[in-house]
Each structure stands twice: as structure tokens, then as C-alpha cells.
Length: 353
Image (cartoon, rainbow, N blue to C red; front, side, top):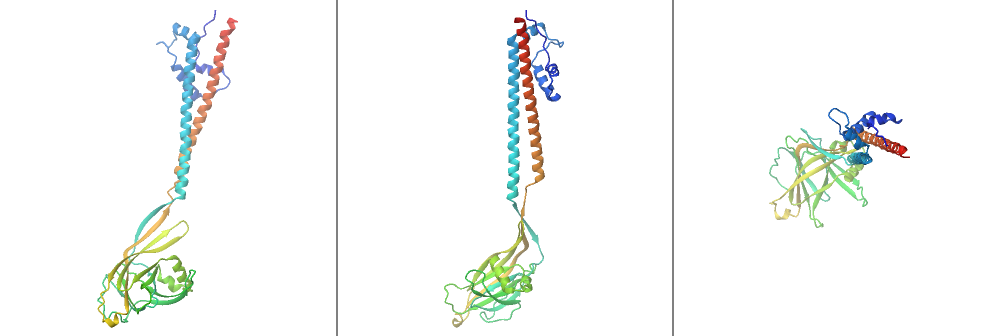
């Protein structure tokens, strides 16, 4: 007759084996499997339950439940591991993307006055008649337009060879621009040009940031070539008064800083009241003024924070370590369950043989 053996807890089984895993994880598995075993109110296993546990069908059913439970746990931890790996990859990708693509930050700095800008004009065959400073957006009525008048501007003349392939000789008038933005300082210039063979008549001009840079430069021709390479050229037409409002933009890159001018222009037609004999000379009028007392500063900012990325990666690697540790304990537990099943089966077969 085959004797019934008393059920043993998984903790006792764990003590019998030579290999021992983590005590806390093993206790968790033991508690789960112990919950599957119903007990009497006084804590003792009933005789009927002992008979059921002794039967091969009951033992097979409990073993299947335990194996299914183990497979489900392994699947959950594999899923969590995959999520942790994806999170680590996404964190590294976002960090590299922010590092390679800095964002643009725009701020406005208010000033009481600007440094004197330089205005380089290329009149060609046109003649400068007058250049005067005015304030508070007020320009007095014209007196004898088309005739030379007294002025108060600081003007230099330079001739140089252009920086581009055509290598043409250029003559430029370099004028010191307005600075007192609070009093709305402006410069009013008047040019005259006799009949021209060109289809369109216009005067080209260029703005650069500091007139003092021009004054202090040792090689003024080379200075003008550099300005022509780096700054934009604009034009104003004959027969109109072109009012140019300037604004300054400073852009700070990764390694250098660039300064550029932006402008808004308004064009008003000149009502020519001169005698017909004088109208053959075309007149050009230009006004230069600061738009507002603000300097626009553009900076490139890297928003990638390495400390946040490191903290996230540390959490991810800790989760991966715990998942690997749990998988290791689960595999050991499955091996122990298999060994116990084989021992029980061998004990049952001994009396029969």
C-alpha cells in the first residue's frame, strides 16, 4: 500500500536544497503558492484535503497552476523590461536631438542711444546736395530743392575694388548715422542726378553697425570689401522721399556673434514744383532714423539637460537589473519544482516496484 506523505511548504523545500536564492523573492513565491492551499480555521490541513493532495490528479493540477502563474510572471517582467529598454532608447534619442538642434531665444534690450552706425551710399553719377540732422521726426519744408545747401553730417569718401568676380571700381560716401533714439534723431539727404542713359534710376546704400570701426580701420578699402560681403544692399529711387527706419539685430551662435540691420521703408512721391528747365535733373531724397530704442538679441540655447537624462537612465538600468534578478530566481524556482516533482514520482514508484 502506498503511504501518503504530508505536504511540505516551499520554504522547507528551499531549505533542503543546496542552492538558495534571494530570501525576500523566495518568500514572495512561497506566499503565492501557499495561498493556493486551503487550510482549516485552526490552521491544520483536514484529512480529506490530505487525501486529495495525495492523489496524482490533484498534484498535477496544482503543478499546472504554479507553472502557469510562473509563465505569466515571466511574461510581465519581460514586458516591463522591453518598456524600460524603449524608454532608455527614447531618452538618449531625445537628448541627442536637443543637443544637435538648439532652440532660438529672442530678447529685447532697451537702450538710450545707439552707437553711430555707418551708412555707405553709392551715388554713381548723382551728386550729394545736402545732408542734415533733424530731431523729433520733423523735417522743415524744402528750400530751393535741387541746389546745393549747407549740411552738418560727417562724410568720408572712399574708392575701392569690389570683392566679387567682376572686380569693378566703386566709389562710396560713408556717412555717420543717427544715434539719439530718444529724441528721434534723423538724417535727411538730398541727391541730384542729370539725365541718365539707364532704364531705371536708383541709389544703392548699405548699413553697417559702427561708424567708429570705419574710422579706426587702417585699410579702409579692405573694410568696405568685408562690409559688402557681409551686409545687405538696399536702394531708394529718384522722384520719391524714402524714409528708412532701422533696427539692430544681434545673433549669438555657437562660436561667433553676428550683427545685422533690418529696416522698414516708406516711400512718398515728391511734388516737383521747379521750372521745366530744371526738371531734367532728377532728385533723390532719403531719411534715416532708428525705429525704436530696442536691440533684438537672438541666442541659440541647448535645452538638453544631461542630469535629467542621467537620472532617467539610472532608473531604467535599476529596473533592468531587478528584472534580470527576478528572472534568475524564477528559473531557479522552476528547476527546484521540477526536481521535487521527480523525487515525489520516484518515491511513489519505489513501493510498486
